[in-house]
Image (cartoon, rainbow, N blue to C red; front, side, top):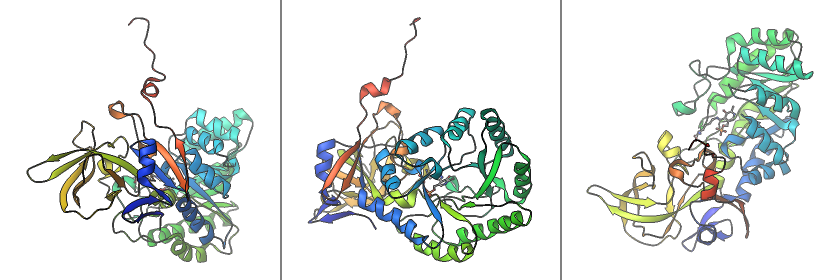
Length: 417
Ligand code: LLP
C-alpha cells in the first residue's frame, strides 16, 4: 500500500499534485511519501511485537537523511555496509547501539570509526576480517562486539545478482564452518561474541526461504549454547520483496507469523534489516518527456531521466511501472522509454504498451524509492536528481539537485598542465 494515487485523473503524492512538485523542483525528481514510509516501518515493528526486536533499516536502499530521521524518530536502527553509511546513520540521529555493520570488505579506517562510534555489532564475514577487527580493537584498547554472518546455503529464488546466501557467493561464513569460527572468536582477547547474522538475498517473494534459513541457523545457535557460547542478538537479515508488476510478496505480518513460533521463548533480541520493502513503494521518480521518436517497429519516448538516475532497469532488467502524471483518455502506443545517456542500455522501460504521451508531459516511474537515488551516478556528467518528501499537504526539498559546480568539486588540475 502506498500514497501515490490518481484524483480526477491527476497523480498525487499524498495530498500534493505530482505536477506541482515537478514544476517547483524540476525533473528528474525523486518524491518520497512520509506516510508510506512510516506505515511500512510500523508494519515491521508491529508484526514483531511479540519478541524483543530492532528494525535496522538497510541504508543501501535509501540513505537520505530525512528518510533516516523518520525511522530514527520511530525507534529504528540501521544496517550499514560502509563508514559513509555509519556517518549518515549517526548524523540522522540513529543511536549507535542500534547500528549493525555488515560487508565483506571493511577497511581499517572503517573498523576504527565503527569501534569509536560504539555500534551494536560487526557482522563479520570472514576469518581474516575477524582477526583484523580483533587486532584493531586491541590497539584501541576496546572490545569489539561481533556476530558472524553465516551463509546458510538457501536459495531465495530471486535474481542471481541479488541472491547472497548460497555457497557460491562471497558473503558470510559457510554454516558448516561457523561453529569453529565462533570457537576461534571466543579465544580472541579483544572480541566479544554478541550475535549471529544471516541474509540470503533480496526481492524474495516467498516466506519459505526465510523459514528454512532461520531453522538451519537456529540449530547452530543451539549448538553454540550447549558449548557455552551465548548468542543475544539474532539478525535475520532483510530481503522481503515488493510488488513492481504482479508479484504478490508476503507482508511483514506473514513473515512474523511463520518466524515468531520459532523464536519465542528464546532469550534473543531479533534484528531485521529490511530495505526495499520499507522504501521501495514509498518513492517515485518523476521525469519529463523530451521527444518522441517514431521507429519502424516501435516508438521511443525520450525522457530526461536516465540510467544514471535509476539504474535498475539497465542493470537487472528490472521492471518499473511507468505512468503519465496526467491520466487522459487516448490511444495506446508500443514504446521503449529511454533516457538521454549515450548507451543502448539506457532505458527505463522496454516495449511498453502505454498512452500516447506528448513532449513536456510528466511521467512517474513507480516503486523507485529503494535502490534508486542511492545507486545513481554522475555518468555523462549529469547532476544527480533532487529529492522531495511529502507529508499530507506539506512537502519539503530533502536533497537539492546537484549543480555543474558540484560535478567538479574536488577535482584538482596539477601545476604541470
Ligand atoms: N542486509 C544485508 C546484509 C544486505 O546485503 C541487504 C541488501 C539488505 C539487508 C537489504 O535487503 P532488502 O530488504 O532491501 O532486500 N541493488 C539491488 C538490491 C541489492 C540488495 C543488496 N543487499 C536492487 O536494486 O534490486
